[in-house]
Image 1 (cartoon, rainbow, N blue to C red):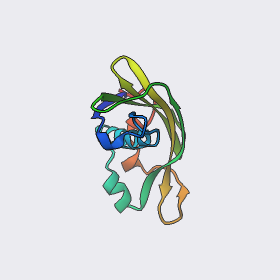
Image 2 (cartoon, rainbow, N blue to C red; image 1 turned 120 degrees about the vertical axis):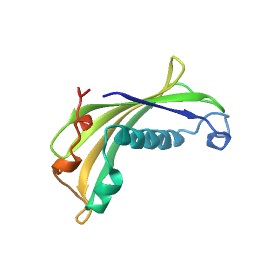
Image 3 (cartoon, rainbow, N blue to C red; image 1 turned 90 degrees about the horizontal axis):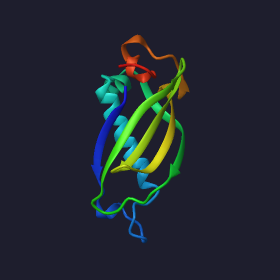
Image 4 (cartoon, rainbow, N blue to C red; image 1 turned 30 degrees about the vertical axis):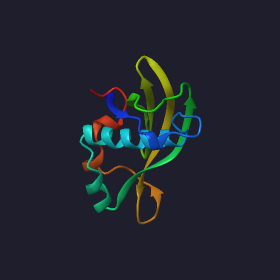
Length: 134
């Protein structure tokens, strides 16, 4: 499943050069991942209540084009890898037809009591966590 969400750049997200600060892109990606999880039916609150979480364990990000105040960005999220306890999402931030940033985000399903990766229980194992799902 590929998911799209939008965000309008706000003035306080800019750095001294007048474009979105590179660290702010991590917030955009986090927001889009949350929206993606909602879209695939993953209930994050229930997972936490059950003692589980999905933690980001690695992000590789390439910056390509500066976004500026009031630009409307579209953030695409798509799963590209799925293993027993972890997976990888590709996320692309675009302004119009131009790519502002592209990231690979590796996540792990974690037992909160130990902080260790664990198998995803069936009630949280949504098809959308895997590549090539409708």
